[in-house]
Length: 183
Image (cartoon, rainbow, N blue to C red; front, side, top):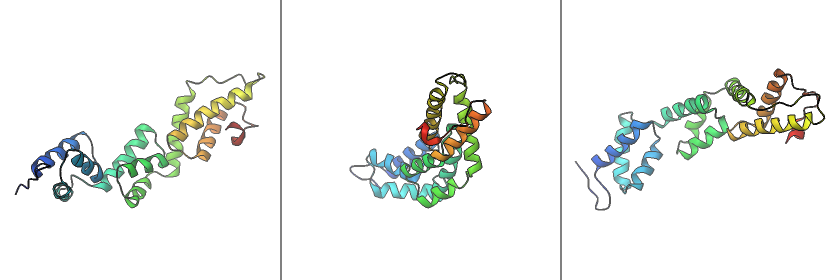
């Protein structure tokens, strides 16, 4: 049974569009609905095709959310806040997003933030701790590192704690370190 709409396309055409999109990566139902709408398929045809793809387990928002969180945290270094926003824009329900985000615990998030800071820290010039402008220069480095983590969705408290830990490890003077002074 091929439904045809004057302004859109057939279910077979809509299915082909979805399958092509799914060959690149997993996608949420919302992403596929949006793509079909942009191509002129009616909501009726899009829903029929997406319902069949869900029954065949080719479209599964729960699985998509879990894969997205794992991949973006591990390979892009995204924090929970950024991942939550990304899932929202992908049309994943807040319940499924919360379940997927629970796969990252605080220790995992902190460890990944530490890796990001160590990698970025290697490219930054740490000032001589005995120089007259040492604190000012150190605070510039702190702002860069904390800003980098903030842009990736890490909380300010965690960002400062991780940066201080890495500065201590690098032998920088952090006795007068005060997170509020650095920002």
